[in-house]
Amino acid sequence: MNGFDALELPSALREAVDELGFTAPSAIQAQAIPPLLEGRDVIGVAQTGTGKTAAFGLPLLAAIDPSRREVQGLVLAPTRELAMQVAEAISSFATAIGGLDVVAVYGGSPYGPQERALTRGAQVVVGTPGRIMDHMRRTTLRLDQVRFAVLDEADEMLRMGFAEDVEEILSHSPATRQVALFSATMPPAIERVAAEHMKDPVRVSVTPQSSTVDSVEQSYAVVPFRHRTGALARVLATSSADAAIVFVRTRAAAEEVGTALVARGVIAASISGDVPQKEREKIVERLRDGSLHVLVATDVAARGLDVERIGLVVNFDVPREPEAYVHRIGRTGRAGRSGKALTFIGPHERRALKNIERATKQKLAEAIVPSPRDVSKHRAAAVLAEVPARADRGRLELYRELIGEFLAEHEMDPLELAAVLAATTVGDDGPGTASEDEEFTSATLAGSDRPDRPRRAEPGRAEHGFTAYKVGVGHTHGARPQSLVGALTGEGGLRGKDVGKIQIFPTFSLVQIRGGLNGEQMQRIGKVTVAGRELRIAPDQGPRGGRGRRDGAERPRRGDGIPPWKRTERGGRDRDRLAAKKHAARRRRD
Ligand code: AMP
Image (cartoon, rainbow, N blue to C red; front, side):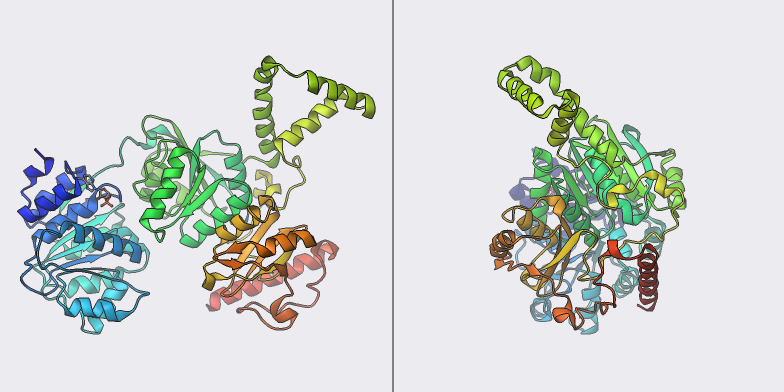
């Protein structure tokens, strides 16, 4: 007896389900498959991991006549990665159907093979809207025989700006075709697409299991963008959660924030929608088994993620829709555990906060971001908490003796020595000495009127206290910020907090290193390999040895050789303001 027996799937699909080892339909499959097999349109609110691909994939195949070599099934997906995954899943459901071909079409790869598969008569096309439009224009793809169309991760497609393409594609398919729309959230824009292109759709939905907003303690903190990485690091450092997820909006932000955390010594990794499924699963497994503490993720990448150890969710930025907020914070407080969620908002984003409060019918408490002092206190408290148990274990004679000798020799107050030992064990420099980011406290926020934009270092220019070095690997070789940080702190022997901003160019990268490197360090790091190439690290000489431009970077201005601490306060600020103005003007032009 198999739970799929009740679903009346055609025998070839029923066989495939057995072959795949599915013993019972998942909730979304049990709800969506019957109406889809009856020919109804379906709107499914479900995330990755719920089995949604089979929920639409099996009925799609059931609607196809494999003896006719024309496109009858069409699936639109937001990313190349998802298109490939869905095509692969549908192919696996179709193994027992003779003569049925599935083709994936997506941007960034040659047209030839995709065109050949289309002209050979594939019956199912899975693709990204942009590339599907391209094939329609080239007349290699005709949609006039489509019987079953699917919009997968519809909210993500609209968010990525595919709304018009999706509309256009749907309007080129026959009005008689069936439509299945799957989405994790249902913003009004999706309701509009549904109203326009679907007939009396059946609505089905699965809520993320055992997670309700009620079991999550929610708060927010006003943090201008440029202080967020420092604030995040301090929130993580003082959290008692076993594991945490940090949500960001874009793939680039996921990488940037992940790298910044790794550089600060946090055991973190980042995933975005572009990370292949296999790698994603490996990372999630590490989060589950405790070898990874912090995951930085985009909304798409974290869909369906179910890890009980997650005790904290930090929204690095405010999610665009309240539903995304609910989904994000639902990653914690699972399986009856309690969880916390903290959302960073900009000084001008109170409206977004109000929207979330309205949608969740809960007020978010304002949290105070821990200061560097709080971090040191938290760490020292953890060290001191161990003291009684350690004292009970004894075998301290040697240390007592050594301390006695030391105190006699140095005429030191025992309290002073205990403080030094505590600071050494905690391993920080003590509050008040850290970098600019770390100096941010909530007090500096009150009068903050800075634009809520990320601050970027200009290429080649080292930040205060850092020296810029050039390494011989760039993104054409496959260098990524995380691999560079890993190499510098691993074989390179640097401390994470000494690795500053990393900028990757096509054929080389710039890394900023606190305090610079000595000859021996340069030699050692120079031999370390990233993406199979030696780093061959050398002090950065600026664009073309200081004369030309670098990858569209601005020409260095006169006076830039003066270290910031030697500039007059006013001059430095004016220059910064000028640079910010120029930057804003360029942004507007772009
Ligand atoms: P999806 O949400 O479509 O990405 O599916 C998530 C995973 O669940 C995939 O690895 C599927 O192969 C698997 N899966 C889907 N349906 C079932 C089922 N009824 N029983 C067991 N596994 C399933």
